[in-house]
Image 1: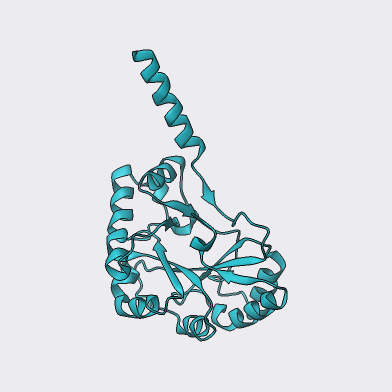
Image 2: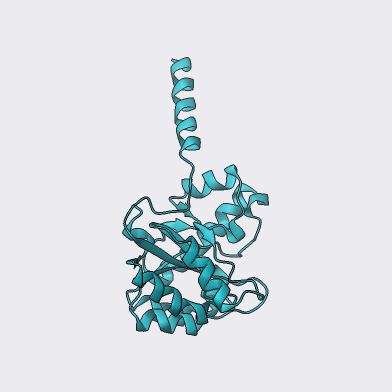
Length: 223
């Protein structure tokens, strides 16, 4: 009996480890793109970039926002107003936006994720489904722990490079258009750190639409 129990536990453990996954693309051949934006804050106060937000809302383009806790606290009412447009999905980006969650203990990771989850539920009334590690840094321990809390971890197909102050509007447009494929998950920043995103986004959207793409939120293609 003990041997059978051990085997079952081993198989369950192996299954959980083998199914740990960081999603970087939507599994589809449809010409769809998921526009995702990080909105985070660490030491410097950060606010919604309304050049980006106003464009998306005016064009009724659905998108996903990965938001950290400190950013939510500073921008709570603005985020609530944005959520009420019905265009945005608000997802978990940790409370403190520690760029090395892979170095945290399991208890610290759990606390950081759940503290932000509570804030998002207060904001939207809905438990978030997806999690994005700050700076994309994680290890197997952190990944499995976040998944055990009921999340799918979603990163991006390729980095847009928009936090680089040296990138120009033209460079950003060319880079994104060149690399986008059906099912791409695009990442930008909507907290003032996407320095040329507000200028480039209308042209990126125009060209992708011209190529036959449409824009979706993550939950439109991910369970």
